[in-house]
Amino acid sequence: MTEEARQHVVDADDEQLRHLIHEHMKVFAKFTSENCDACEALAPPFAKFVDAPDNVSILFVRLNSDQNPVAKKLMQEKVAPFFVSYCQGRLLECDALIEEAQVVAQLERLRTFMPVK
Image 1: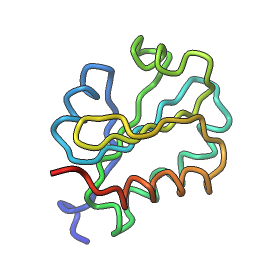
Image 2 (image 1 turned 30 degrees about the vertical axis):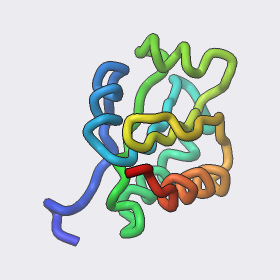
Image 3 (image 1 turned 135 degrees about the horizontal axis):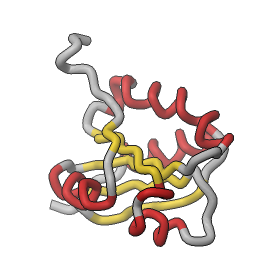
Image 4 (image 1 turned 90 degrees about the vertical axis):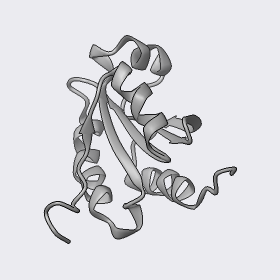
């Protein structure tokens, strides 16, 4: 894969996320928090998902919920890391996940989701 074609995780704030979910067909967002052990543990697999060939159609976004009021409200009583799947600007699924297998399963559901034309 060329360096230009290589994807990366986009760090965004609430407002940027609103634009990104409408500019991209599929978005997989990870809401993190300061001093979160599970967030740190899931950082390497999250970065690995970005490079997987099956995920080239998905934009990966990371938000710090401590610094973004809308993200913080979405999480409310949930704990970080919190993963959200969007397709065509619509929220498909959101949940606090702490195991890599759970994240893989949610990502697979997003990857195979067929949007309405």
